[in-house]
Length: 128
Image (tube, rainbow, N blue to C red):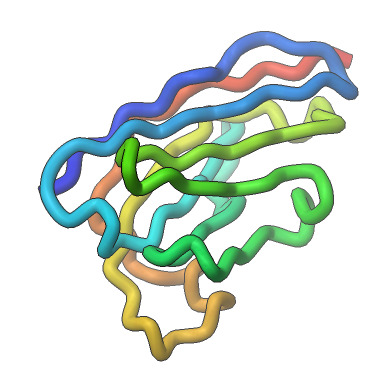
């Protein structure tokens, strides 16, 4: 079992940067692919970014490529989402999630894999 707790959300202006953190507890964190998802008010939850268990592979939604960077520190059982050049359309509740994905799967599968564990979310608000 893995428990996930997000932090780092807040209110920023368009063009600002923000770094989200996700702290994991429980066993075998390093064996999980970690993902970030977001859900804006009235919208469905969408994939943002994910990183393989080794940290060697990442995958991003087209809408955030070049602006968001996902990373992980297995020694600290943490995963991060660095966000720059934020836009009002990035405003949402951001969720951290964990999935077991076979190493043979392509990184594009990170977006559609069945994530087993979810955090409670952290709110990101971007004013124009």
